[in-house]
Length: 397
Image 1 (cartoon, one colour):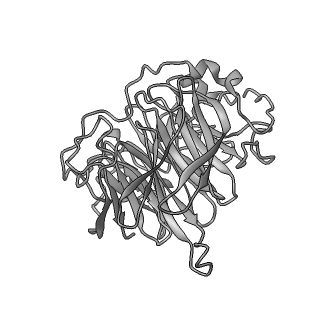
Image 2: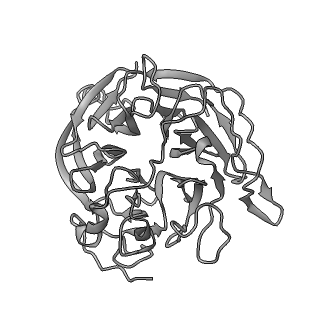
Image 3: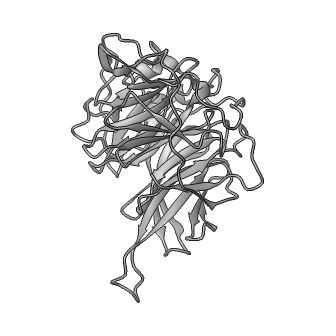
C-alpha cells in the first residue's frame, strides 16, 4: 500500500497528488442511464435474503423486496431545476423575540445553475446566491451542501477540479445571502461522470466527503490519490490526527462513485455507492477500509476487501443520498425511482416506498421536525419531468 504524502492544514491545493485524475475524462457509461423502469415497476433483483452461513451478506439471487405500506406524502415545493442536495440551517431567533425557538431553514442546491435556494414554510423558493466558479458538465456542477456553525459548505465542479468551499451565511430567514468564501479543499478529481459529491458533518464534528474515481479506476486503490475515496476533514480543512492514514484526508478507499452518507445513533457510518454494470452497494464504512473497486464489484468474499451489506442491480437502484431515521436507513434511488428502507437491526433486508410514483429520487434528508425530505431529479436530462418538476416531498418515517 503506498504511503500518503503528509499534508498540512488547511488543504487548498491537493492537485499535486491528484492532477492526473483531475484531468482525466471518464469513458465509462454514466451511472444513471436515460432508460428507467415504467411507473409502478417493482424490483426484480433487489438484494437481500441473508445466507444462513453469513447473516450479514445478502444473496445475489435473492427474491424481490416487498413494497412498504403507503406513506403520507406531501409535495412541499415545485419548479426546482436539477436539485441535488438538501441541508437544514438553524437560524437564531429574531432580535425582538430572543426567547423564541430557532427556525430551521431548508437549503437546496441546484446542480446546473449553481444556485442555492432557501425554501419558505409554504415551499416558495428564494435564491440565496449563486456559487462562484461552478461549471456544469455531465454529472458535475453544484453538488452536495452542508451547514455547520452558521456556514454553508458546498462541493462543486469547476473548470479544473472538484472542490469544497465554505461560505459565511448572512441575513435572516427570508433574506439569507452568501458572504465571504473560503476554499477548504481543492484539487479533487473531476470528470463528466463519477464525481461523488456528497458532504456531511458526522457526530464527531468532522466533515466527510465522497469522491468518485472520475473515470480513473486504478486511482481508487491508490491511497495517495483522492479519487474513489471517502474523505474526513476538520471543518477548517485540516487532516484530523486520528485519520487512518497519517497526514492524509483519506478515510476509506476502493470506491467507484459513492453518493450517500449517514450515521446511526452509535456513530456507525453508512454509504451508498453506484456500481458499474452488476451491483450497486450499501456499505458500512470502517476507517482505512478497502471497498474493492475496481478489483471487485459487490459481494466478493475476498480477503482484504470490505463487502457491502446489501447490493442491488443498477436498474433497480442507482442509489444517491441517504438518511437515517426511526431505526432505518432511507436511500433515494435514481434509475430505480424508489425510496429504499433498510432496518438497522437487519441490514440484509429492505422494503420500498414511492416506487415509480415521483420519478428519479436524488436525495433524502431528515428534517429537524422528524419528517423526511426527498428531492426528485427529473429535470437533469435523464428523467421525464412533469409540469411541476422538480419537487421536494415530505414524508413521515
